[in-house]
Structures are given as C-alpha cells and as structure tokens.
Length: 278
Image 1: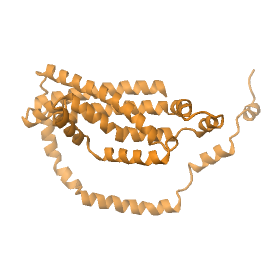
Image 2: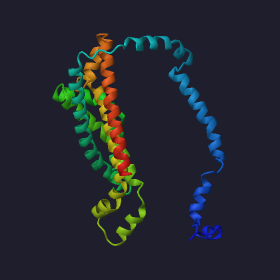
Image 3: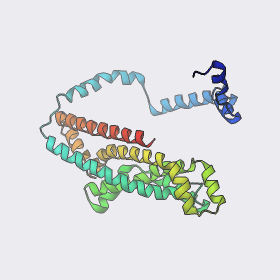
Image 4: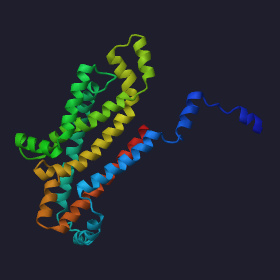
C-alpha cells in the first residue's frame, strides 16, 4: 500500500517552538555589536602582524632557502634504521605511559575544576593551579625532572604527565560542565549522593568526549616526546637534534619520515576508535 502525498504530509512531525527558534536563529543577521567588533578585531590583527614582524615579502624571498634546505633532505639515509626504530619505540612507550598517567590525574583534577561538581572553594584554586601549569612550557618541566631523576625517558614521562594536567584537565572539566542537567537534577531530586550523581549522571554523558580528548592527548604526547628529547628526556628528539647539529641531512630525513609514519598510523587508529565510540 502506498501513501498519498496528503497522508505523507500529515505524518511529518511538526517542529516545536524551541526547535523552530533554534533553527531560525542560526540564520539571523549578526547583531550590531558583532559588526562593530569586526573593525576592532581587524585592527588587533594588523597590530599583531606589525608587532610580531610578520613580513610576506621576506617570506617570499626566503622560499628559495627553504627549497634548498628541503633538497638536502633527499635522498634519506636509512643505514641507522635500527637505532631510529628503537628510539621511536621508546618514544611510543613514553607517550603511552604519559597519556595514561596524565589522563587519570587530569580526570581527578577535573572533578575539582568543574563548576557543576566542586564547591567554589575548591573550584577556583584548582583552576588557578591548572592555569599555572598550562602557562609553563613542557620543556621547562622536562629540564626540572631531568635535574631531579637524571637523563632518560622517565623524566620525559613525568614532564608529559604534569603538562597534561594543565591542558587536558581543563578540557575534561569543560566536557563535564556541558552535560545535560536533566538527568543530574532528576537524580538529585530522588536523593542521590554526589558520588552517584557523578558516576551515573555526569560521567556516562561525558565519556565519549573524555575518550576522544584522551586520544588527542596521546597523539600530542607522541609529537611532544620528540621535542622533550632535545633536553635529554628520552625519545628520538636527542637523535633528531644530533643529526641537525652534525648536518647529517640524510639521517635527519630518515628520522622525519619514520616519525611521520608513526604519527599517521596513530592518527588513523585514533580516528577508528572515535568512530566506534561516537
């Protein structure tokens, strides 16, 4: 049996007032204060370009030098592929441990940095601590831990873990703040404890975002571990720096290619996991 056009029309669900307002508001003309803010933003951008010394002409003139540098990277020299793979494996292991420790500690800190969970006397100090950690470069943390525990990947793991609290901890907190208040209010109305509200009302809603951000943290830690090696915190960064200082461009090219392959594989794996959880 086929439906007539009239019956198909009558069976369409009607939009509610709130949904209609939301859809219409997406196409509204920007408000006057937004239009007034555009010149201010343009002036700020021009001022920043000038203050930072950004010069398109100089960039164009330097293109030749960049091309010359890139030409030196070919052909790559894979004669030390064993050393490269061993250091990449160490970098990968550092990223795994740093991500797990960083994600767990960031989640614990995020409970205190979420306005819908923590009281104000906990919320504001936690946010300040996270701001301080986020303001310090990871290389500074790496140098601090190298002086404390010596050269090697252990210092790099500690630096990644501490740095994660400032960055991912803030994102975790904001993900938990954006959950739907309906289930939370319903649980509070029936007398659920704070732990039950967090366990059954907040975490299940925020879990997909928390997982996605953890995968993003892992990808960042793989790239970050290559930088931490510059100060002796393990990983392939030290080998990369040595190749640059020795002008061993073939070896440098091989290292870069291997890093690209590793990061690409991790990115594809993370994308697959994200598709399964969303």
